[in-house]
Length: 140
Image 1 (cartoon, rainbow, N blue to C red):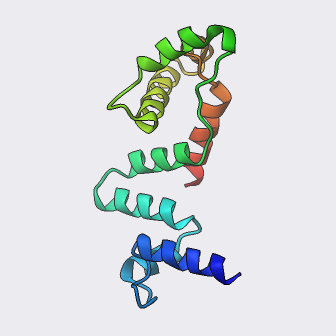
Image 2 (cartoon, rainbow, N blue to C red):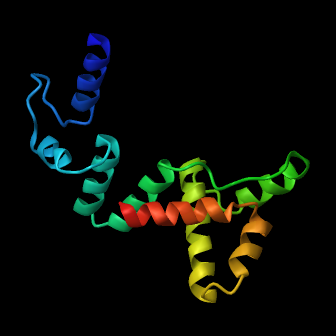
């Protein structure tokens, strides 16, 4: 519909892929070459420019996934306490990013020796979701 097209154009103007005259910008040319959503593409391009590509790809993968934090209702208080250990700057995104980095350190230190499962259980994290984030990172 015309309304959806207008929304899409407005979104492209918002990320500066199009000018207000609806012409493709240099950023828009770069984004058009990527097989990604424009917001995710811009995040990754800016990560390249600012030399923090791994972080931007990780954050992109996190944004494209569900939260790795999970807990039964009966253990919600313990799960909240575990989550607070990863909390930074009152940001859910940075909290998940820190949890992911901690999980990666455990994986690298133990070479798949089962410590990842214990880490995830102790911190109320889904090992499957963290592995999915890792897989998605590889695709990006």
